[in-house]
Each structure stands twice: as structure tokens, then as C-alpha cells.
Image 1 (cartoon, one colour):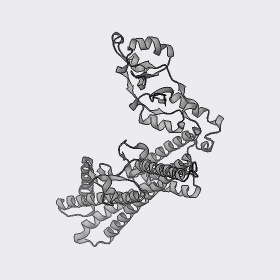
Image 2 (cartoon, helix red, strand yellow):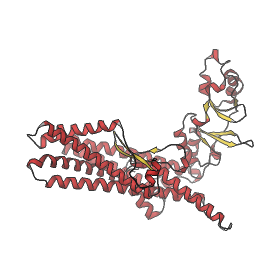
Image 3 (cartoon, rainbow, N blue to C red):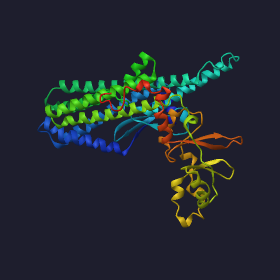
Image 4 (cartoon, rainbow, N blue to C red):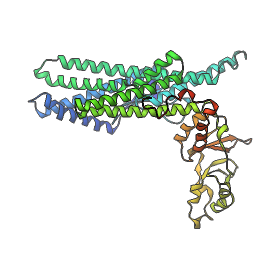
Length: 451
């Protein structure tokens, strides 16, 4: 049975166990069976301690797996295609298929289904918007144009936040309930022969509750941050406000953890440094999210055509590197050049550094296609694409160091018409105040210590 069929029919998603999971289980077993249990329950054989540690590792893995099973159930109810669950060195991870916007790209993998859920839910929302547009247009032509694609995309992003919040609630409720039950069991089990079992239950339950507490702390990538974003979205209806609220809450929780951990070092001991580390991570992720939000706000309303630098002259794939450097590259004073194949279409780009890197003695014999960067490895965009979407594409495919702007020709091939690189992004950000963009985020500047 295929993965798709299994998830569609409501069965358990496939569970994959990676070698790193055995390492993590062994670490928990040693930590519990060799360090914790001998100090809390004395006069027991070593085999009993090791068995208790192994049982504790299995219980902890079961709680994490159960949380992801509940997330998978919530994902299926939201219409997402759950591919499976992976048990690895970092615990349990839910794998959700990407949406239609990335068809063929392969399954996305993210802790707690963060990136995959956003991608899949957004793709599902866009498909729904497109279906609504087609249905309206087919109704005798009376409904053509009733569905705004931009509005449909905004609704899809909002739906992605709601789906993430549902998955977060499912996972948090599972770990919190299991942890609380084990803590109660460990406290009320009688001593004597069950003392060892009580300590195992108490330790695993406390650890599960600790994991729940860490996930509840708001930050852009945590379950608590998704809950904050969902609450703000329901109250304001604005996805931008929801994401800003999650990032701001992450900054506050990060500083609170750092302060609490610093105080705990003096009151409790160096174990409180874990709180400082968690706070530092939350603060860094939140600051990064705020920077991305400021950038997106500053680029609103701009397209690739508005900022792109004109394309350099095109090189022929069969031209020698020596001729290309002498006749085209050096006179143009540019760094990225489109390369045309024998049919005249764009097959990729050649970079100045790669052309100049060919040894002097070989330049007359080496063809440009030997240093070609294929188009599949380069970030591309159409002239009308939103500028705010291009940094993410460049991060995924940074081979050319810029985004190549292409448009189709009459013969069906594509041609390079411009480039958008760091300098173009920088100018767009510098001129944002002149265009009245980014003002809503001006209060959250990087120099502000608390926000």
C-alpha cells in the first residue's frame, strides 16, 4: 500500500526509524539507569537500573511518537497528505507532502511539521482559490473575476497559520497529558518493590512536561508561537500582524528565559544555564523573523522588473573562453552572463569568476559551456514576480549569486532580461521610506534592545 493510500484511508502513517534514534535511546537509558535511578532508589541490582532506564527511554519515545500521531491526525483532518513519521536522533518528526506549488520537488521534512505544513496548507488554499475561480467562470460567464488571486493567496497563508495552530494544540495536549499522568503515577505509587517504577514514571513525566513547557514558550518556530499567531489572526484578521506578534512574543520570552536562567545560576546552580541557552535560541530566531518581516514590508509593491539590472550580453555556449572574455565579458564590466545553446535558448549562466578561473593556456581551447551553471541550479523569476518572494528563491538556489530574470520568446524559448542581486535588494530597502513602505515596522529596529 502506498503512503498516499495509507494516509487517505485513515491508517497509521509509516514510521521510519533511523540509526540516530538508537543513539538517543542509549543516551537516555544511561542517563536514567546509571545516573538518576541509583541516587533515588538505593540497593537495587545494576540490571534493574538498566532495565528501568530502557523502559524510561521507550516511554519517552512513545510519548513523542504519540504526539506526532495526533499531529498527523490533525493534519489529515485539515486535508494534508501525511507521508510518515521519522524517529531520529532529535526525537520524532512528522513529514507532510508539499503543496501543489512545489509539485515534484519531493517531500518536505520539518520538526513538528513547521515548514511542510505551511507549504502544503498554502498550496491547498491556492488550489481551492483556483477551483473557485474556474467554477465562477464556468457559470455562464457571470462570475468571471470574482475571486482575486491575491486575496486567495492571503486566505491560503491565513489558513496555513490556522492549520499549524491545530497541529501545535494536538501535540502539546498529548505530551502535557501523558506527562501529567506519569507524574501523578510516580507520586502516588507505593514504595518498596514499585519504588523503581515510580521513579521512572516521575522522571519521564517530568521530562515530558519540561518539553511541553519549552514548546509552549512563544517563538516563530515553536508551537507556542503558532498559537500566538493564530490568536492574533482570529482577532485582527491580518497575517502580517499575526507573524509580528509571534516574533515579538519570542523576543520577550527569550529575554525572560535569559533573565530567569541567570538568576537560577546563583540560586540553583549551573543547570540553570539551560534556560539561558533556550532563551538565547528563542531570541535569535525571533530577531531573525523580525528582520525578515521588515524586509518583506519594505519590498511590498515592487516587482522584479522595477529593480532589476539590465542583462549582460549573451554568450554562445560554443565560444571559447578567451574570445568570450576579450569580446564580451571585459567590455561589459558585469559578472553574470546568460549562455545561449545551439537553438538560441537560455541554457544557463556563466560567472565572471568561473571564466577568469580558467588557466591562461587553456582559455583558447575551453568552451563556455565547460564553466556553465545550468539553469536548473539558478534562481529565476519572471519580470512581474513580486520582489518580496525573490530572497527565498535565492537562498534555495544561490549558485549564481543573484536571481536571473527571464521571459519567454516567440519561439517558446526563454531569454535573460535582467538580474536581481544583493545590490538591487539593497537599493530597494534603502528607498523604501521614499515609497512609504516599511513604516509599520519602523518601531522594531534592530537597535531596540527589548523589541
